[in-house]
Length: 373
Ligand code: TRP
Image (cartoon, rainbow, N blue to C red; front, side, top):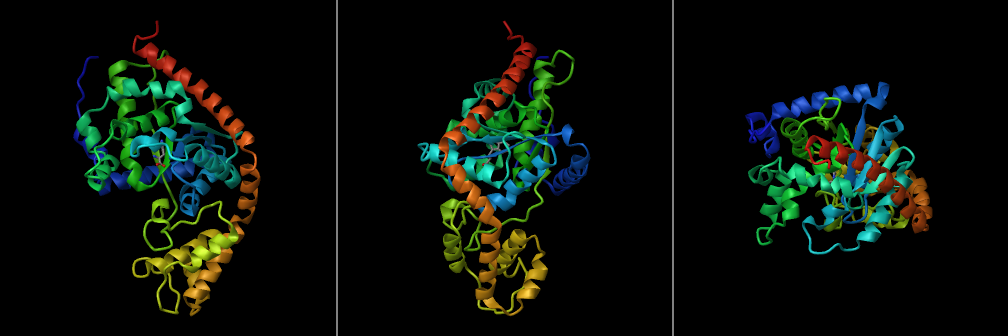
């Protein structure tokens, strides 16, 4: 049982940035298979997904992942939703408006249709036994493997003058604990996130090889699969990646007027004919895409119908489409945000449920590691 870590070539490739085309195709094929199976056998799956509460959730989060989470939940898949508050501090010096961000994100989740009866929403800092898994898990990865992680590498490349924190270096392992503590077997992600899932798979495998199994003789941790997001990437209103720090987002909780004002300032071009051509006209096509997502229509058809309506006509349509789609969500959100005691009680219940699961898993881990005294 005393093996040293052997990193075979395939693992090496998957833990590093260059996810090969073949490996991406494999993940996509597997993901399609699972997607087909989910509607007939939702009980076979447990999903873990979540967000870093660093700011307000925006329509990129909504169309990119939140709507999909609600869809999966409503198919009957048990969903665990981590509010990754410890991840807030891996790359900054303070917690910022943490409490506010957590409660506001929770109001967004509930307003968008996450149902706390069907989904367990928890803050990982509150789940002590989850965090304790980090210690055995850290023994299962090497520092060079962590240094090859794409997010860790990006952090190094983008902030050459800021020494990296130990939490940043090890956060993929903490994230593996988020996934494995509840034995989730499915993690919805975009393709840039595949290496993170691979860390969780490697840890599940190595734990089994090194420390042993549960009492029934089965591996303690399943190797989770990625469920690749069906959503197209949404750009911000300036045509670059949508992100709070760039000030180009529309928040889920904004008013209709604020939404209209922001879309008025959105970048377009001087061509009156509206087309859906993401490669050559990314900004215009992004607005067409948003209108399509908000109305459930097809981008091509929306562009055809707009014809020569110009940027003004396009913006008017997008504004109406988004405001109509989000009106009921925003109304519910306002009610939820007005009752922080209720939001806190939802979180406390989620944390209690997550803690019961984490304690059970930690007990199995202690048993396997001969640490149950
Ligand atoms: N890192 C994710 C984000 O930035 C949040 C997250 C934390 C997560 N733990 C996770 C996602 C585990 C998937 C699985 O949004």
